[in-house]
Amino acid sequence: MRDAVTSLIKNYDVAGRYFDRNAIDSLKSYFESGTARVQAAGAINANAAAIVKQAGSQLFDEQPELIRPGGNAYTTRRYAACLRDMDYYLRYATYAIVAGSMDVLDERVLQGLRETYNSLGVPIGPTVRGIQIMKDIVKQQLAEAGVSGASFVDEPFDYMTRELSEKDI
Image (cartoon, rainbow, N blue to C red; front, side):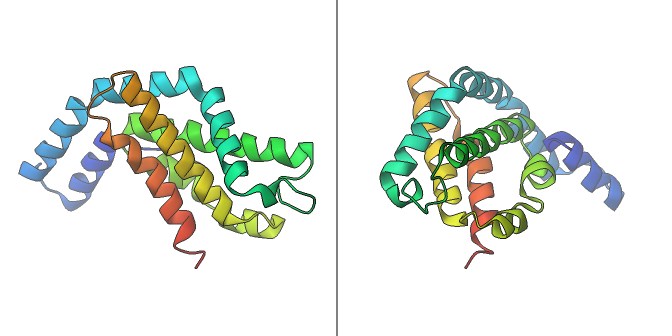
């Protein structure tokens, strides 16, 4: 698992190059957003259970067929598994926010997820929607908490939905 700094260094090292202006600007941007990244992670951590609960409620309000008999979140066990997975995505999105890199998502979340969900009959569409709902809730909470310049929060959520969605066409 790499962060933005180690990824940048690796890329320049492999090419045998010194940092250029783009590399320096990238590092500067990462470090300037460091405090906001840590604040965002703290706010997410403090409200994780509420974020997942609210996102689950909104998802099931939008797609009630999921919790009806025959739906993928029907039965207490399946409902709990859905919320557990949402918590998992939120936690790893937080890691990616702090790292400033999506590597952790590739390594720990996305690799094999589609195949696993397909083999279990878990629909990808509601998963993607749930991730986007969590992103919206997190952004709203960060704005209310006064965390400014938090546009980096979109990146891990959008990355997960893009990676899950583009292959499920």
